[in-house]
Image (cartoon, rainbow, N blue to C red; front, side, top):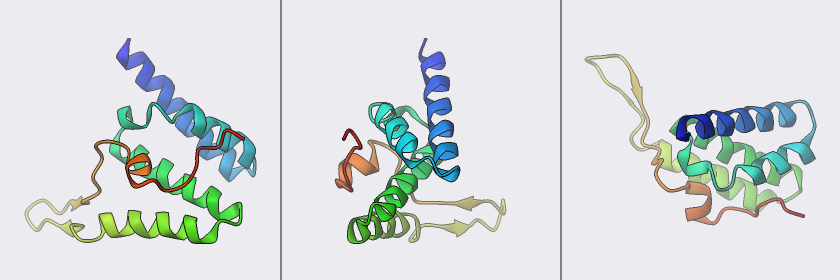
Length: 113
């Protein structure tokens, strides 16, 4: 059951990104609202993508300070420990994906309106 829910959440996340990139920002907001409770169950990279998307929507809504603050916080969280490991040649990021960074940091609203 948990696996099925995870896949459903991943599909919602994909639909939200597609809606955004297709210019359907209201649909993207609605899908992000549906994902609010699932954020912590998604893969770390998906959490980052959703956090970026939320901040992009804030920018489009004219909430420049709030959107930029959220994007800067994401960048600052990833930057210090992003490094190439010489032995494996793989990139590591320091983005902390535990409890939702979005909710923990208080960056922006949910889109219920």
